[in-house]
Length: 394
Image 1 (cartoon, rainbow, N blue to C red):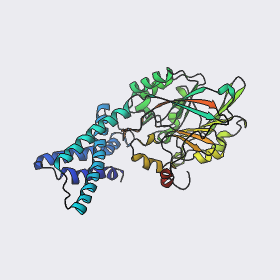
Image 2 (image 1 turned 180 degrees about the horizontal axis):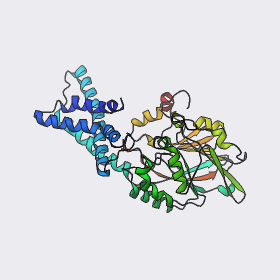
Image 3 (image 1 turned 45 degrees about the horizontal axis):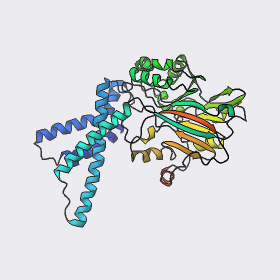
Image 4 (image 1 turned 60 degrees about the horizontal axis):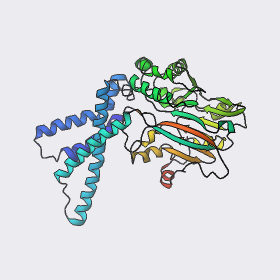
């Protein structure tokens, strides 16, 4: 069913773009075969590794598949738009033929946009600075800087060399704390052990802290979490730590992923994560998925850091991603008295590596003491996001 779903854009392209081309039958058959092969990228990924989430091909081939699959999806969207315009023209003006030159223009645009999208998705991400005011923040932590990495999806597409470049750029920022909010890998421990090795060199004054994302549970949760610890990253799986500075305290808590129970692992448990935490210290929560932000706000969390959505990747597609995440998809939100930051991701899943208008990011967050004059620290979900969002979180 998964592969049939991803074949639908290709079938539309075959029916509405390839078939009407004024080409010889042999040329159209060859193009149709290329489109069908590219559309089944996720099937070839499953055959290569046993998982659609871990294509074990040479990186150049993974890049090519992402470009071709992205071009098919974009061309299908453009062809639908052309067909709608042609239908309207037929109904109101009596003519609805799509000129051949317009078809070629759409195909060229789709291929170019896909190439740009793959480049933007696979580059070492640019720095993004965010400043967030936290009520009750001890003065000793005013100006405290943390770096959020998330959704690295280290894989054949994001290999050791990419990981090393991310680590070097992260260390050069000289932040106080590094947090990694899940989905570090795509692949088995044996396949990815070398690719994640550069994470051992991440450095921050108050350490490197990690939580699992849903992809950790796809590839051997226990083995990966133990290995993260061996790399010097400290796990917060329904747990917390207390950061101190000259008598001031700040709670850093983390929960497991919402998908954990599907593989018979402990579900996210915020009360357990906060058990024993000092009641007068602000709480920063690490939660891979943003869907349960309202529950965190109700528990008195001051700031939640999440990922998972990849920022929606492409305008339009981000609306569907928002629907699956209670309206939260990218950037800062106000959830009751809590600030939520949804990170676009350091990288993204290699099964659809396109970004257009939704950049990856190395996110340096500076926390400040909130003053009485501070307004809402973020934007609330838009009316459209609320309309698309499920009625309840979870």
